[in-house]
Picture 1 (cartoon, rainbow, N blue to C red):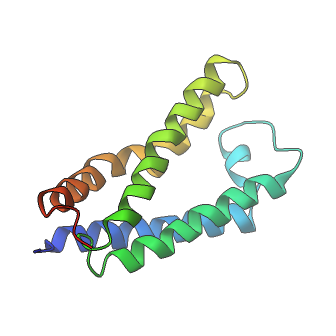
Picture 2: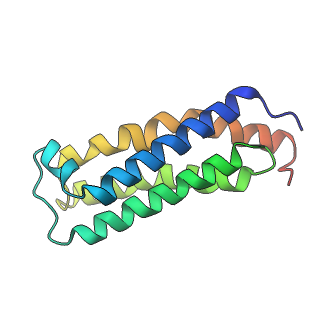
Length: 131
């Protein structure tokens, strides 16, 4: 059950990113909306709650980075979030509930992590989902 050094690096980077993004959303809940020219949320507390969840993911990624193969379930939960987030966006965009500008969040929150997370999960699969 050999963890490759790049796996630790990816999860540490994901952890730092998520903690920073989550903190930004919690402390400045309207900033993203202002940045992309969207209407600010009526209830920023809901957006701040999302920031808290993203920050907690960051903690999980940091802990999983110690042994990504052993802690593959944390990576899997993150990967699922990175799949379902864009699917939710597409559904809401097609339904006219969210503007196109919201897609900018998908690039750094989801898309860039698909390949490395999938590769980590594939290594865990090769090791028979070791725990």
